[in-house]
Image (cartoon, rainbow, N blue to C red):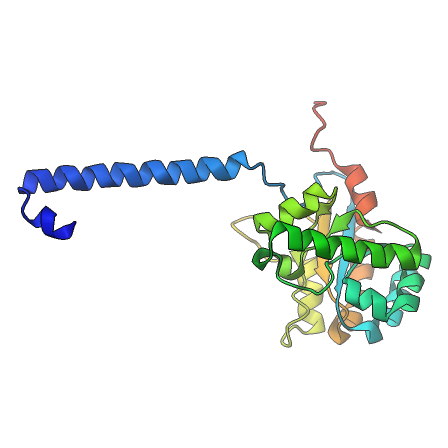
Length: 253
């Protein structure tokens, strides 16, 4: 190909280059259109509302030693939260899972193995979701409806798998990043109560979803987070409750 081009006059080479560029743009356009035509579901990151409601979510694949204390703190501040648990964790901690559900918290799906959804096929993602769904239902008698993908991955295979099984995929508005070793209790509190400006906009806590994990520093930070939210007039609710406040479809002026 390149040898032939060398023997073509410069004007002809320019025409070939232009033709290749147009072809490339056409292929790119087709790829973009094909992605939109797939109707890939959009994850839930925040609910549009003027009410002071916020959903705390706790992703669990480890850290069971911190759960009892977290439950105690949540109860003292009348906070209801959503626990996204892996199937393998639920199998190892059935009594703890029952305690979490008995106290009025929502138990939802975090996959089975804490695998990378983006690296799995749609069928593999479905298998993990259904396996975890059965484990949880066998323990607490409730079927899961919401899915928090491990690592916050939002590739099409995980999103489509969840959607086809009737799940809503949940991500977050505010990330405590509490899994990092350098996340002190003070930083965790600040990331919820006074989040930094992103893309020139300060995140709105109304209708927000907060991500956290069962870690020692999270347990230390919780009382300050919950008391601070209460002082601001916020009610801490489950994901199921939060979506009832959604005004996205409200066209009333």
